[in-house]
Image 1 (cartoon, rainbow, N blue to C red):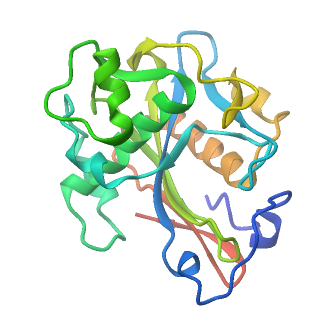
Image 2 (image 1 turned 135 degrees about the horizontal axis):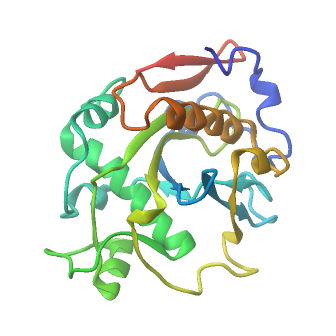
Length: 251
């Protein structure tokens, strides 16, 4: 089923205050690699999904509820993690990219884990001091004595921000069970933070929330995957625009 077949790119970006750039601007040619981690709580009668509300003064998706995430950094590929991605997740991550490698695939997933911790205070991993030097924002894991783990990290979707915005991202949407969180800490959610609120919501409850179109599409994909087997080696949807229309491809 093509969940995006009726979406026009012009309908995908209501309320964004980002400014368009000329076609030759680097942001138009090279979207930044990004990753998100969707936490799923399946302990109750219905799955609940973690969403965070972005600050209303941000240029990109102001006020929207989103999955925690952000840009992939070069140092993400050098982090020593426990466990490993499943073979099919690693394979899907290496499709439709230039210079594919297992290290690059790992970096996408590790960036999602790092961003989740930075934005929500929830850390996916094990309570054991990390090995090796940790650069950049990974110092938080050293401070908390948490080593990230790649076990049971699933790839749900991939999407490229349509042309026309100064901020463009090639985003991998990962999911993990909430039970993978080994530690949580306070102080990341407040009125001046990037995320000002966190909510656990059922799929039905998300329909009443302020969601961007691509967030809704990925939620629909996640719901289908949960019903058919989240860990199955099914094709991964890849959303990108062509001729002003959002298309659903598969990788």
